[in-house]
Length: 303
Image 1 (cartoon, rainbow, N blue to C red):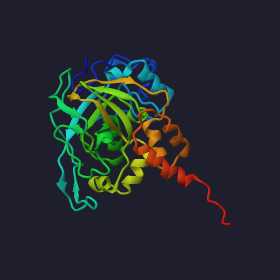
Image 2 (image 1 turned 180 degrees about the horizontal axis):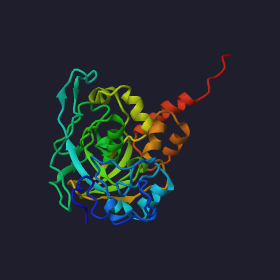
Image 3 (image 1 turned 30 degrees about the vertical axis):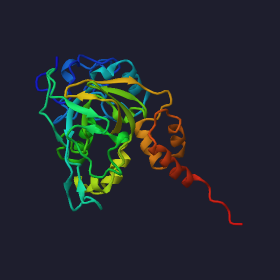
Image 4 (image 1 turned 120 degrees about the horizontal axis):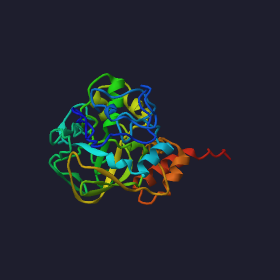
């Protein structure tokens, strides 16, 4: 049972996770006691070196064996859709050359918890019903149909920015709980409600995102944190509702995490070469590879 008032992450079982590490209160490190479940919002939890996976008090390092093992041993069954967020394109003078943006995403239904689901939203090949993208060149399309961000990563920024960040603030369509999105693999497939999606890449921050948040040097800070969230390709249309489980269906053997793919985008040629071996990667990575690998080539000496 979820403790009273625990509405944020939608986890319906938190009686203890083998191998967990609590937030420094001296309790048994092998189990997380039932009442150590923390509110995802308002009480982000104790210090840690990475996002919490499977339980709001458990933190592990991105891409570590612990993260992968937690997912593979079925802990991802605790992962939930917390909020579904959509927005319409509106005029905005600060929104780049287009002067329009749809970054303002709002929850389509109220909060859910205690095992209740919200109203389902249709998931099509080009995204969620009722959602729009203003800049179709850099957002949306089949390879970036849905953007998802973890509530735990939003809470990471709540702690550092000192401000409330409601679900949808980062322009995400789906806010998840108990799922380490940064440690997900490019090409990994999830079931969201009755829809099936595939991870295609990280969110690369832009000037519109910075203007929207109004935070100094936001593009640099967001990139450095390596908590980019993930874009998803819809491989099976369906519907998803707040409270639905996020089920990891399979993970490719050629492994590049979402966080690593962000580093590949910014010029890590070794990671990019690994990423090019991932089946089902989006065609945008071939374009990125041409740019990055060309820049990595040694300059030829003049004759």
